[in-house]
Image 1: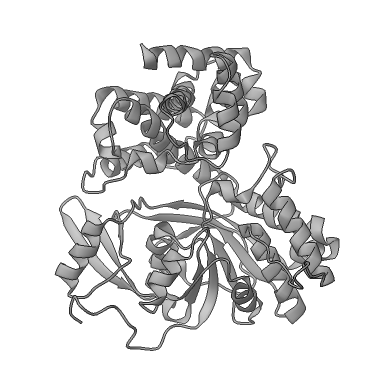
Image 2: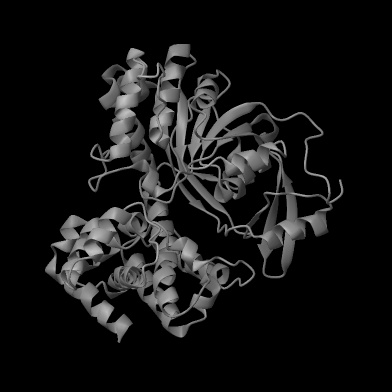
Length: 467
């Protein structure tokens, strides 16, 4: 193929056995990569659905699902043609989603829908006060009762959990048996979160459906890791020059990848272990290692680094102040993780090497999005644990302080705040200084906002950042 030709399959695609929600760069660099590299990957095709917009599906469909993965190491790039995604669909096409989930060949549904899309309340249960969730409850009840709207139509669910509940309703009706739901999102206890979002919604809509899901759907927890920055026009041009074909949708990623899974696969799974995945009985400590050490450092750099004028992870790490703050937070996080079995010193050393790879332009503005849901997982548990142990929690408090300072600056400048809780944040930011701080922290965690020691620690770090 020449650079004027787009990608098209020349051999038969693998049969669809995995349905994926959240067609983005991370999924294509991670689960799609592991599936392609599994020893039996040729038998496991993926049908992937977008989230908010159809753009990625349209682009990939024009290429028969094919795309190029650019593995960007410190010394150069490697290119691989990815074939494991065999269909790409608009997430709003719930009819196709339902058909595929109901198919007897489908063994699992995987998710990369972002933390915010689970629509959970602070206590981890489904947030029934969320208008989108309530709209899905109404739509799913109408579908169950076959009640049409004024135009004679049945409305589809719109949230990720709602669409999947609708699809699982079709699987139940088809009698095609149990399957696994595998959450691959960056949040602690992601299997529990998926169960709360999906099972919780089904319970409200139809208790019998909820009971069927409880009996027939396993929820698999994972810890996932592979830095995947946004693709730019430069990568598109690079693929054309190096590979000799036009690819509208390449993905750039780092050489490192990690996947730890825990749970049952009642309808089978690819041999991901042959591609390097690890299966464990207990995953919580692996999740926290990744959420606190990798993702926590990312969030700290995202806000503190931008406040100090940096644009990328590599730039922030090269700043001695940011580097010292990362070390401080890592020491706190490590103090609250088991000392055995996680190889934390080696993990920290590997993170420093990965962060310093300046050829991976991991933009802090991208990491800073949806901070309210991210810091709830990355900073709040560490700060609470440190204070409970009688320590200062200064590193975790600084992460929250940098987030608050960043939001205040955005509010003053009239900049758009990219966060699913933007309405709550804007209400808080409109308050007087002091009151705004407590209200912002309450968005993260109500009890933390009522903790005088925690608030004092955060306020002190804000003073240091703004001095």
